[in-house]
Amino acid sequence: MKAGRFPSGLLHGKPAPDGGIPSIGEIGLNQFAPYLLNRLSAIWNLQVQEALKDFGLTTTKMRVLATLCVSSGLTINELATYAVTEQSTMSRTLDALEEQGLIRRRARPDDMRVREIHITEEGRETFTQFWPSFYAMYNEMFNGVDESEFRAFIATLHKLLHNLDQQNL
Image (cartoon, rainbow, N blue to C red):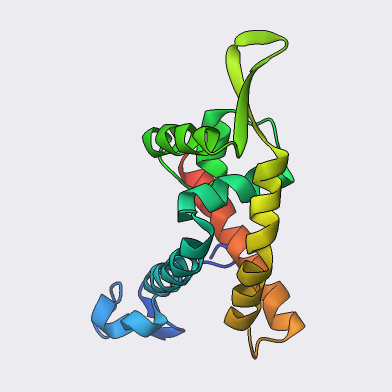
C-alpha cells in the first residue's frame, strides 16, 4: 500500500460492509475532507466579504492586493492562479483596481507583449488598513488550535495541494 493512501475498501481503518469502497453515507459528511474544506472556505469567504465592505473591496480585490503585497510584478495568469480566480474575473478586477489607483500595469522590459501588475503605494496602504481585521479573523479561526496542530494542518494542506497538482499534470 502506498504511504498515506487508504487501502481500497477501508473506511477509517475498517473494511466497508460490502468489502468495496465506502459510500458517502458510511464516511459521513463530517468526516469527508472535501466537504469540510468547502464549508470552511465558504464560511471564511462570507466573513471576509462582510469585513471588506467597510474598505470598498471585494474578496477578489483583496486577494489581488494581498498577493501583490508579497510578490509584485506578476502577470494576469500568475495573479489568477495565486488569487484563486478565473482569468476573466481577474481582468475585470484589475480594471477596477487600476481605476481606483490601487495597481498599475506595465509592459515587461524584456518582452513588451507581457504586462506585469504592480501594487501602488495607495494599494499597499489600502491593504495595510484592512490587514489588522483580516489577521484578527484569521487568529479567531484558529482559536484553540495549538502550534503542533497548526503545523500539522499546514503540512497536510501542502501535501494535498501537491497531490492535486500531480493529478493535473
